[in-house]
Length: 297
Image 1 (cartoon, rainbow, N blue to C red):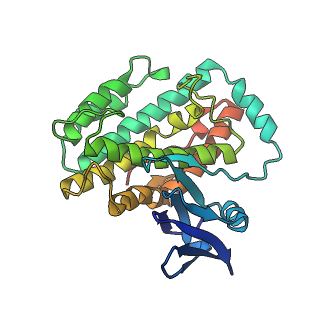
Image 2 (tube, helix red, strand yellow):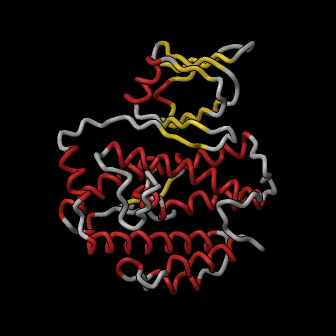
Image 3 (tube, rainbow, N blue to C red):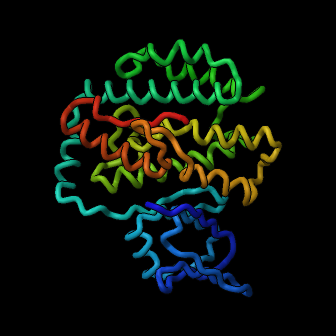
C-alpha cells in the first residue's frame, strides 16, 4: 500500500468511483475527487453516507482500510477484503490446533515488546522509564507473573497525571484512547483475516463473547502509538470529551505513522500485515523466532 491520505466522512453524502478516483458528493456542496491510490484509510462516521458497489470493490482491490462507526461516532466495524490464499483452510486448521506451550511463548514475546514500547514512549517524553526497563526482560512464558498489569500501573501513572485507564470512563483521555485503539484493532483484525487467520481464536484472550480475541492479542505492541498521539494532544490542551475532526484525524492517522520493523521504518498498516504473516509462519513452524513485532522509533 503506497497511499498516505485518510478520509473521514462526517456529512451525508454519496461516495462513488470514477477514473480510479473516489468521488465524494456531499449534499448541497461541490463534489471532491481523490485518487484511490493516495488513500489508505476511509472512516464512515455519518450514517447517511451511500457507497456504490463499484467503489467498495475497488477499496478491496487496493487494500484500503474501510471503517464504519456507531451512533456515538466510535469505530465499530472494519471491511476485510480477501487475499487469494490457496491454503486458507489449512491455516485455519493449524491455528485451531495450536498447542498451549506455543501460545504461551508467543504471548511472552508480545508482552515483552509491549512493555519495551511503553518504556521507549516514556523516554521520548523525557519521563523516567527505569521501572519499565527493569520489567521488560523479566516476562516469563505466558506472562505467568502478570508483568503486563504491573507495567501498566506504573506506565499510566507516569504518562498522564492523576489518570486511571478505564475503557468505560468518560474523560477526554480515555475517550481518545478508546477511539484510537478501535481504529488500530480493526486494522489488525483486517490483516489477520486477509492472511487466513480466524480472529476469534487468540493465544491469550479467549472470551467466547469476543469475536476478535487474536486481534486483541496482536494489538498490544501497537497501543503505545495511540498513547503517543493522545499524550501529544493532551500536552497541547486539545483534548475534549467531544472529539472534534482534527483529533479524530490525528488518531486515524496512527495507521500511517511509522514504526521500526527489522531495522526499517514502515507504517503501522504495513506492520499489521507483517505481524499477521509472521504469526502464520511461527504457527506453522512452531517457532516464535519467526514472529515479527515492531519497535517504537
